[in-house]
Image (cartoon, rainbow, N blue to C red):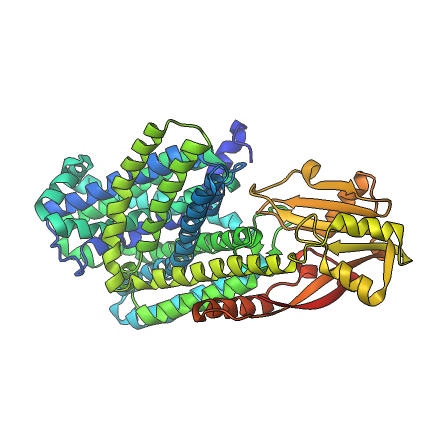
Length: 622
């Protein structure tokens, strides 16, 4: 949607509110309550309330408004954002050594996201349903079962896509922000002195008075900005301007009003700390607010589920995860996808987390370490892009990085102590994903190197076949090849065993480039290698799904026409065995073999009709 069209800007802002701000918009459900949890030992006193409110306000200004909306969102790849996009941009002009560093920290950032996305639906939905305790304390036992039921329904409907449901997302989230803002205004009017907390001196004084304890309390304050990565990751769906306008005109004012409203309530009634969000509402509004909160947290969960689908597709196309089944759930929106294996693995993990931790406060203790870790990595990569891609002076980018890390590193350090309580959970999940991604990438590279080490010349083979051709048969043979200028195993096996060659041979390479989308004009490159051999190279962005029929159509426009009924696709199927290696590499190799066995086959990956495929196998030791 073009943000240049003024008439479309309000609609884009409304859509942005419904998708981008779900996670950060539901943070008031638990943030201030967790600041006063027994974990930190703060009493509900005016100076502490003012200190926390000041920290939350300036965190929203410094991290969200200045860092992400003003600086990080400048780093886009053809309009797309996200940690893997930033990794791709940062490594584009880097040296080999710097590229390795960029890739490693980029993958760590992506792994952190997987760890975070398991906790987000659990803590959001449970914190909303805990309003039942206010309604009737006897309902506490039903919170966990209700949360499991709500999330089960949410994960079950993923296969149907979000196009229909998303039509109500934006109005519901807009209503959510307006309601929490009005609740905050109502409370602030009753205790206007709470607005003194806008003065940053309260945050500074809080640190000076409570010293080390205030530093660790940042682990709770950071809950106010969880979901901030969504601002950057969803940039490609809505554009920069709608995200910025929505934040400054609706989201930020409503969040601040609600936080300060909760603070005003605590000034009047310190005992309201047991659930200051729901106690803001009058008695008659508690049930409607509970329903609205449940809907808002489901929407927030939907946003991160869609985000993990998008991140997974990027990782697959960039070669860091094995090919897997990716279904498009909308004829209109290419970004609406469904990945069954990720959906159900995520569902199992979320349910296990809910059943194990049983209360949102326990989950909140684990929340934040993955978020702040990703924030540190985003700062490093975005400053790398500013220096190498935008050619900003090194002194300027170093200064900006130092300023950003002065905020990010303390937040990460304060959350790092959670490792000894529940914080190990997102780190463990992130570590597992990092091992999977690096193992697949490195072992796949080792396999491809073994495949292509025979050293035979493609040009020499073609010249020999043209000079002394075997028996030629009618039709077209397409040999799928991962790298240009190498001889596909399937071609060698076909010549060795079948001793025939089709009258027209296409060596087709489908590659993924480091941009999100490729225009159809640049999609296909055709090169005639000999009278009967052609090379076709098709390029796809990491947010696109390759399709052989589309490639055939584009080749036809270039003068190389195909008929699917007269074309056979020859694919090589490698049976991989592990060679002699150290025990730790053997474990990594076994993981690769398991992933490879369950990876999506090429016909499904490239939308090749199964009845046109011939697979020729070979055994390779790696």
